[in-house]
Length: 81
Image (cartoon, rainbow, N blue to C red; front, side, top):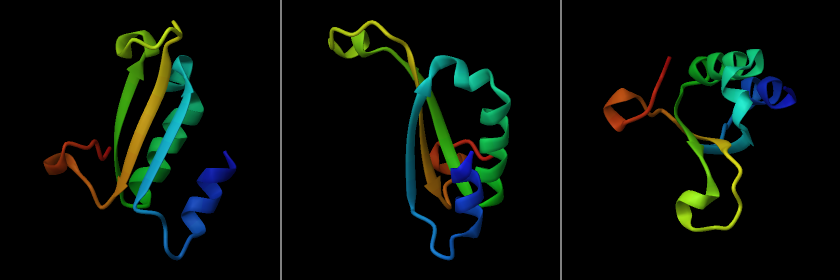
């Protein structure tokens, strides 16, 4: 939650932000707020639910991943709303 406040105040925000969280994050109020902050700050994002087993890593645990890119939008393959 602190990251949401910090991101909105940065004069030079990072081009890329990567995050990982539990799979339930995608359905949370915090996720909803986070995506609103990203859009307000000019980021596009892609979201994934991935399990390391998919990559032959012996850890059967679904996780949420998000890649955020400053200035990216639907034409770049990113969500922006």
